[in-house]
Amino acid sequence: MNSMTYFRINRPHIVHETLDDEVIIVNLDSGTYYSLDSASLWAWQTIQAGYSLAEMVEFGKSKFDTTAEEIRKALNVFLDKLKTEGIIVPADSPLKATDAPPPAGHSPKIPFTAPALELYTDMQDLLLLDPIHDVDDSGWPNVKEQPL
Image 1 (cartoon, one colour):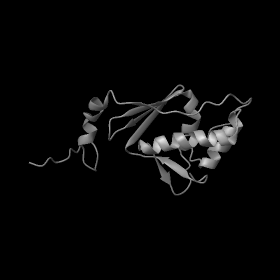
Image 2 (image 1 turned 90 degrees about the vertical axis):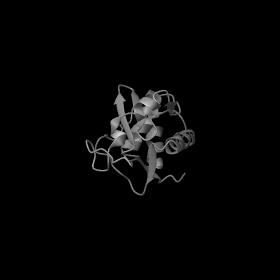
Image 3 (image 1 turned 180 degrees about the vertical axis):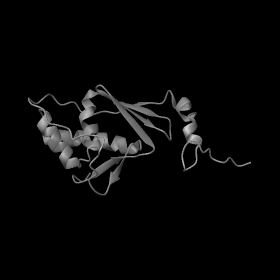
Image 4 (image 1 turned 180 degrees about the horizontal axis):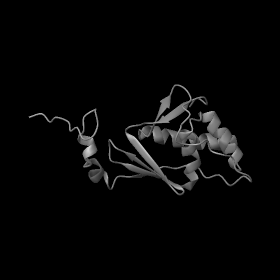
């Protein structure tokens, strides 16, 4: 993966919420939901803040007691998983988010734990029953016309 690669959250198909030290992500198209724990929160914040892969690695080096290479390898695996799941997509340029402040560095450095994505499918049927899936492009409450 190119170190100057940027990513963006695949909106409107993906919604997310940060609750304390956990991020809950929902794919509205598949009904799959995901969890990022506190070890992954820093990586998610850098994606929201519009960091390139190189900037993510630099931020990780300032935060963790490990090498840039270990951070880069872990981020490549994590970002590939997010892309495979359709949570993020590549962006042509930096997208500085308005809803997330850039992550701040911490001192002293802490031990590194690779970011991980937990996937859950147990509520797919319920999430796909949501009437939001039955609206047309103009949005709620305009329901799609169903073929006869």
